[in-house]
Amino acid sequence: MPLDGSRGTSVAGMRTNPVLTRLGVYPIAALQERARAMRAAGEPLLDFSIGDPREPTPVFVPEELRRSIPTVSQYPTTSGLPELRRSIASYVHRRFSVEVDPDTQVLPTAGSKEAIFSTPLAFVDRAEAATVVWATPGYPIYERGALLAGAAGYPVTLDGDFVLRPGQIPDDVWDRTAVVWVNYPHNPTGAVIDRNRLNDLYVRARESGAWFCSDECYVDIYEGEPPPSVLQVAGPGSAGTLSYLSLSKRSGMTGYRTAAIVGDPEGISILKDLRTSTGTASPEFVQKAAITAWDDDAHTVERRAIFAAKRAILRTAFEDTGNEVIASQAGIYIWARVGDDIAVAERLLAHGIVVSPGSAFGSGGEGFLRLALIPTLEETEHATEVLRACLIET
Image (cartoon, rainbow, N blue to C red; front, side):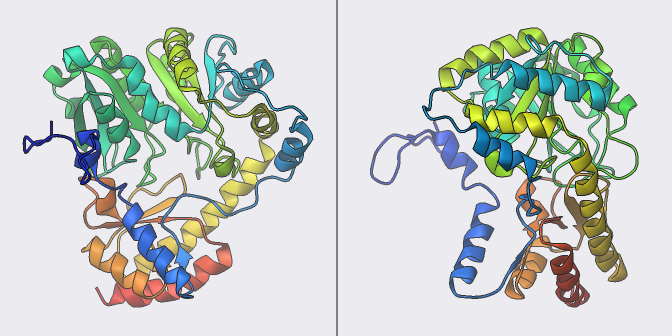
């Protein structure tokens, strides 16, 4: 029941899940509604709010998609095409120098968002009031998936370098935790965790018997040294850990909805059983297009360079106006301290620039803005003129 003791019902009196009422609207949705209304009124906007890159998908991907559309459409299997699993395993070996078994350690998914959301359904025991831990500010889907699965949530507020540490989770919470989520490179801040700190978290999760789940969808968008994966610290067999990988940002395939879970064979088997019930699998023609993306690394080099150039432009604009850019070492975001994040976001929107206030990402995000590196280089340059003017007013 809701905290006020009322039933979980809608205005019309029909029953609903009270957790949805508690969670409210997806945080960025209200901002997007305002932006849509402005577009409908003919107002020009530059949108830095949603992490949906506009650089063209590598041409060979849609070409393969078109070639693979069958005459007769049939259901895809939960396990995905064997050749896709082999392609993902090959990518993991190239990128992380880790061997994984494509038959027992790889599970293709219809994007990483739905896979992350549904994972607690497989590992949370409602009868034991199992806990799911996630960091905040962060991607809201960790909280939503946990609470709708019936878990007790334990958000950990990050600050400073925005890197989660084992000591931030009390021992009694560790003792009842079923799943710990980490996300590096981090959304919304672009922070990167080093391999030693990632290992510290993994070891503590193993000691407590918690599944260590690492959202690594930005792991191929970086500057400098490649960010580590939990697959590297876990070693052969990936005991107790699952890595969530995606082609959305790596290959500009957000609309294709294709990703993968890689790791512990037991965890993969359990999730496969769950996903057989949910029917969430990408069409096979999408899977075949995904194979071409996982097999090619050259296009990711080009994409990294584009995002780095945009990041440099925006970083300079913030720093020139005395607003500190925090973390923002990887991924597709700039995270800047601006004071009143809501007021600054509203001021920018009034001038045609859509950004996300940090408070939309939970506790610890107050006073920051997140800008997704989505508009073109030319548009990003243009936006800095408005950005500087609005920031100087703060």
